[in-house]
Length: 108
View (cartoon, rainbow, N blue to C red):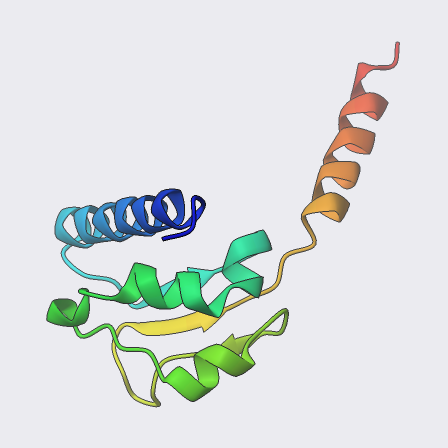
């Protein structure tokens, strides 16, 4: 096992546990959305996070998941509930915009 594999597995397991807790607290969900760095660019991590959540109807389409790298896409089969999708985020642009807005308000 490579040294970085264990933390990656632990992280995916923790995220799956968090998702399961949210589902229980909310009584279900319509969708799971992956976004930002790993969410947009790591199909294998998305698959690990979703593994074991079939009990709530969550399923991935392996072909769609593998193809969805940095693009907006549904990665669950059509009609699956909850839906699973990837939605890219331009985090740097959001941070820059928020910073500029804050700086404007902070000026005397």
